[in-house]
Length: 165
Image 1 (tube, rainbow, N blue to C red):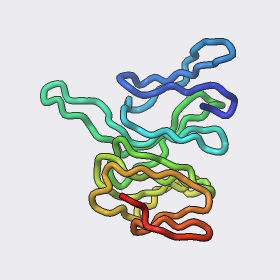
Image 2 (cartoon, helix red, strand yellow):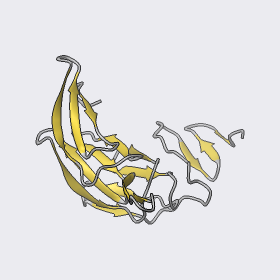
Image 3 (cartoon, rainbow, N blue to C red):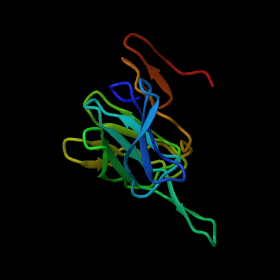
């Protein structure tokens, strides 16, 4: 959901996006992604733009193999258009992109290589220095106040414990 209550609809077998307005119950054109994506993440940024990361793109008709994407785009509601937002170190599919308090997005998990790149909106660059552990392909990340997870231990503001598996 966008900051004004409208909903951005994108992805699937189409490269076009639409905005649904619940007040008028209508859809309006909202730009074209390059290329179309499925299995991507979308993250609402604090300024109202939407970060679209990774996913799966066009499939080869002969082999059936689909292109896994490392590209990212930002959708701007003021212009109703997409613009490039850099490239991840590795492609991502079925991952998360969590907005951090400092306006960076943490891209984590998915079904491809378990790198942990972060996107900085100030520099417009991806930071791939942090790495997830092997076997975290389907891991997801969420931002919780006063909580950090490191080496399987959940740490809050006053206590630390190992999560039960």
